[in-house]
Image (cartoon, rainbow, N blue to C red; front, side, top):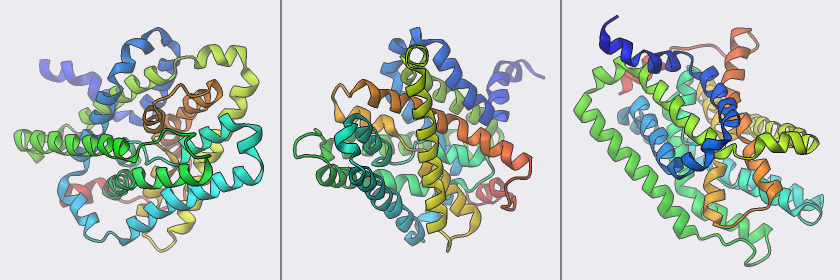
Length: 332
């Protein structure tokens, strides 16, 4: 091993064990809450890094191939951002959740009215699922979110109760997309595709570090809450996992017409939502229970790739394994 390889070995190691490293990063985030205030200002940079890595890992040519046949991904976007939030919020209102537990109802809105997290294309790659379709779905969902989130807020919440500005959300999301695409394009031109393919695991290691920054920033207060309100935390833990898995299952059923691996990749993305976007966009001090839902809701996001990988290794997944990474490498 050369000196340079020894320097970058930790990144390669993290990349080779990406799913478990991402899950562990959440536990580290809980263990070092004193760093939360220090890293919270770097949340935007972490999100931009994750999206840039997604563009680098997938490649613009593979993404373009997906966007040339957009109908399946457009339908998936409509299900994720129109049908599922309307179903969840409608059921919540029907059962009186908006009146009896408005802070939980607000958390439900935060969990449903947002696009997938920016790391889902990388998660898909770690699980040997098609990353290009996940990235195409992410981009379309980010583009649609300002309008769909505003519509759901207008329908399911009293007028003026949510300070939601579609233009500010749109500008924020556009900034992430344009900035990440520009950075990825510049890095790709300087480094070259062959070199990027050789350091794929190192890029995955950087992704783990970016997820660690995010985990530390958002897990502030969860540790003490687990001690002071263990019953509530346990309920929210079950509820957030159930919501993520329920969305994945419903999306998979809706995408019966799509090739199996692509449908699974989009379904995974659907269950892992970027709740931090809505928390930041609301620009207000959200209720404590809503924040706790948001924080506990990171467990499905950070643990789902690892759990899926375990299920696959134990033969619980019936979907055939294909060499997705090779096909995407060719498409690049």
